[in-house]
Image (cartoon, rainbow, N blue to C red; front, side, top):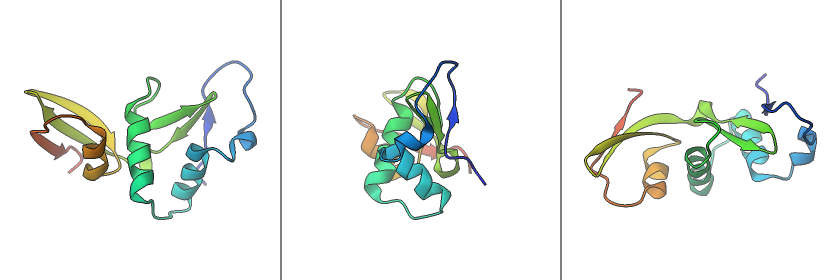
Length: 110
């Protein structure tokens, strides 16, 4: 069975059980149970993945790493004459996260 999260810091942190009410914890449980994610949840995961400085496919919370790589895909995005890499749940979530004119989106995992 996959784990919910793993500790990524060396100092003392709260027990994982104390995070049960957090959104990231509940979404990770939902992903582990193969439940369907809503549009709002997909958008939230995509936004949080691309706006943290610790991981590319995971969301950090209080010293715990919640990995969402099983529901993410790598996309190449051409914007303002340059190419960028983003992980997202789908193209719609990626478009909702980005600002400005998007010239092209390519699924890098095809």
